[in-house]
Length: 322
Image 1: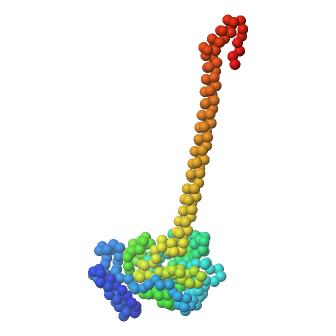
Image 2: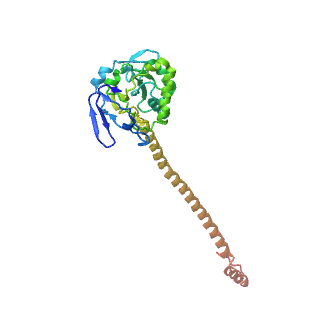
Image 3: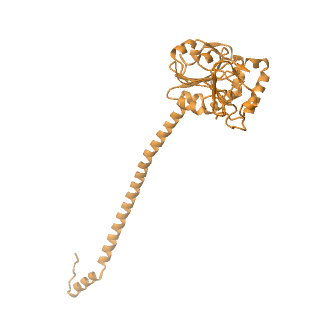
């Protein structure tokens, strides 16, 4: 099976690296590929040599009018997804592979569990997510049902956006990512079943070798991007949350709460200690007063007082004790 011309870097088990600018042959011989038994973190070795350089304004200008298709077949220019009236200030555009890719479907399921539209729109800088696949728009309803994705999904069957924004083609599977909650076998079986249900529509799912990436647009320019090196190399969900400011905002809020708690707690303790101290002082004062009175009473009834009284009686006079 032969892939179109692209620069590919493949790393072997002994550490050697080979590159080719010609058509790259993908071997399906099990002896030349790794297996889960030999390396539990990877199924194949070798990633497409791409970079994460942000597209320039000039490069974006060349594709901003490229049409993307909605599920109902309507079209709109690519630029309208990340700029213009009614669009969030920041938009994360996620390019997925073909619409029957079980890996990308699992990626969106994991993303959906971790990120909601409301959480994005409530950020200090309102943010949103848009999905683009390389298949026909007729398969978008199936894709939404399979992933439960609440974000808008569009199609670029021409793959012009993929090509112009530096995304490439490969069948390399790569290491198992954190977002994969299901096994490779389950993902493959799910894809096959979906394809059978679609009948001839399965041929419209898109180029199986096309890989995608993630691009964060802000004020019409790309401020961050990640291009897939293999068929499972989407940016991990925690990374997306951090880039979009979700985790940063939540951590800052937690920090403010902790700081506020620390500021309030000593004050409460000081107030409590002060109240307790005042109570103890008042009790001591009352006890001291009572003790003084008791001692004064005992002195009045002492033998000295009695002797004085006796002397007064003997002299026939009453003696007043001052």
